[in-house]
Each structure stands twice: as structure tokens, then as C-alpha cells.
Length: 438
Ligand code: DGY
Image 1 (cartoon, helix red, strand yellow):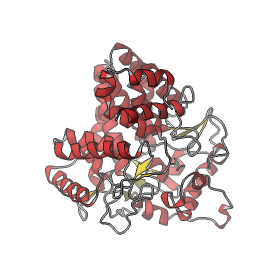
Image 2: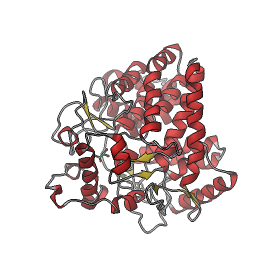
Image 3: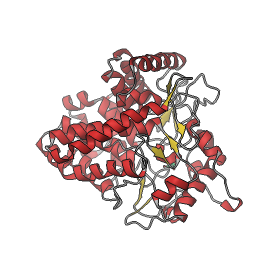
């Protein structure tokens, strides 16, 4: 296990670009929003200042309206498509045009709870930015105050090609003149582990719409080609809002409490709209047609993390959770393995993701389903210990997939090993931090 800890430290060092960390070399050569959040958590166990710097550099790219974009383009790197020239957001630094699951406040709150006065002071400094990020989600992604977040691109969910988006993408008209483009992701990773060409055409069509309307989020929400509710973003946002509230109380930000309390109430109530009685769980849903996705995902299992659902709903979700775990060697797959759309190796259509497992296990433990939380955590550890720091893992065969030497997998592993890191009696970790291990 120690050698995996050394490897995880090395991965974070290798992917370190000074004040931000790339998810992995070449496949993802910029700074990604939720990647940086989870990476900061792992870094915190090694170097607290560097962890806070990771978050500060991300927030440095926050838009004037409060949005924290999903990618920050530090330079133009031909290894990635679509780069800044396609997005054309006209921001400085240049960024993509939408957001990503807002884990930031939850990560910050975790760092404050684990840390001391310095951490509280750092959190106090960025608290206004976190607050305006949440306010942006409330205004731009739920302008009708329904308590349901609408995502405008599958990339905003972070779960890019999940079958959840198939119904929304089917409604995206791809113009004949979409043009020739050259994907870079399939140069770095086997194409059967990545989204299909059909999906990429639609991903780009949505980006092109945003660019055409100057990234005006009112127009994009009302008239854009894609608008869906996502249990992932909904529950991550709700949990982060609850964490923001706890943090506001702890840091004495009294003037913000009412506003945040209202958000919690609004999005708790709105979450009910995502309950799909037919499948017995929370599902993605098209905001314009009301049509449900008909399968359960690892994001469905985040309802416990967000603390929503009646006892009856929780029991139904737990029955499904047990059934899915029984069907897989490793929990928690990103699509129901007993659903025909399941593909054990294709990105978000089956594989297991360490960051999702981190949040799912926390939620299950909060709801006192300790046996299930234990299973998710120990499966995460086994997958990483057997395969290293892969981007995602096959839930049946347990193989590492996608990009290798992946920052957020390394970060979650370090967090799972936090007790060993604290003890570090042999000084192996200290040496790895100081010199790297090759
Ligand atoms: C990609 O390029 O695959 C990313 O997930 C988009 O954010």
C-alpha cells in the first residue's frame, strides 16, 4: 500500500503546473473545475498552502457574474479539442462557457473541519467567491426558482456520455455545416472507452450555439439545444449549499445565512421532481419535455449525500443499490449493469469513478447505511491498489481505464489513506513529497 501512496504523491507532483494541477498529462492539459476541487483535498494532506493555491487559482478564473467555468485554458495546447479558439468566451484567462458539478464549497468545508486557524482564514478569504458561485447557479440555472438545476450541456454534469443524456441529445439538431473537426481524446485513449462520434457532434453543436449567442446564459437556458435536470449536479449543489451554510455559521458570516437557508429549502423541495417512481430512484429528466431517463446511475445514489428523500424513497434506492452492488464486483457503476445500455468500459456508461464513490460513501454513511458505505470505500481502495491511478475502472473486471496517472484518483486515494499519511512513521511520505519517487 505504501508504494501506492508514493505513486499517488508522485502523480500529483507530475501533474502540478505551479498554481494548478492538470487532471492528467496530454489528455487533459488545462485546469478543470471539479478536478481541481478533489485534487485540492488530496493536496491538503501533503501541503496545505498548495491545496489552497489550487482553489485560489481556479477562483481566479471566476466570471464576473459568479460562474466558475468548467475549464480554464492557461495556454493553447493542440493536444486538446475543443480548445479556447472554439469556445471564444473572451474572458481573461480564457475559459470554457459553462460550469461543472460545484463541489468546491464541500471541499473547502472539509478542509476547514480537518484544519486549524490558517484554514479558516483561507476559507474566509474565498467565502464571498463561493457564495457568488452558488448565487450564479440559483439565478442562471434555475431562473424560474423551481428548485431544479438545469444543465445546458452534458459536459456541465461532468458525466459527459452517460445514457442519462441520450434523450436530451436526441433533440439536438446537428447542422450539416458542423464541419470537419479532429478529436484529440481518441488519440490518447482507446475510442471504445470514450464518447462516440454521434455524441461529439452534438456536444459541439451545443458549444457552437453558446458561442453564437456570446455565452449569454439567459438565452442559452431558454433557447439552447439542451436543457436537462441532473441528479448529480442537483445533489452535489444541494450538499455544497448545506456545507456552505455550516461554513457560514462557523465563520460568522451571519448576513448570508437567510439567503443560503432559502436555497437549501428550495432545492430540497425541487429534488422531488427527479424522483422516478417507475425505476425506484432519482433520474435525469428533460426540463422542456418532462421526459425521464429510465436508468439508475452513481449520481442517483448521491441522494443520501444531499440528504433528500422520504423513508420510502430511501428504502427503494437502497434496494436498488444492493441489487446493483450484487451485480458488480466493484461498486458503484455509472450506469445500472442490468440495464441494456450498460457498457463496462465506456467512460460514464458503466465504469466506476473514485470521486463519485467518495461522495456516495459519505452520503451512505451519513444516512447510517454503514455496510454499504464500507463496501463502496473498500472497493475504491481495492480498485486503486490493484490498478493504480486510472481515470476510471471496469466494475466487472476491475481494470483501470481512460487516462492513467490521474490527479483526482490519486487525491481520493490519499484522502482514503489519511491516517497512514498522518502516522508516516518510516518517513516514506515525507521523502516522496520532498523528492518524488520514480
Ligand atoms: C472531455 O474533454 O472529455 C471533458 O470531459 C470535457 O470536460
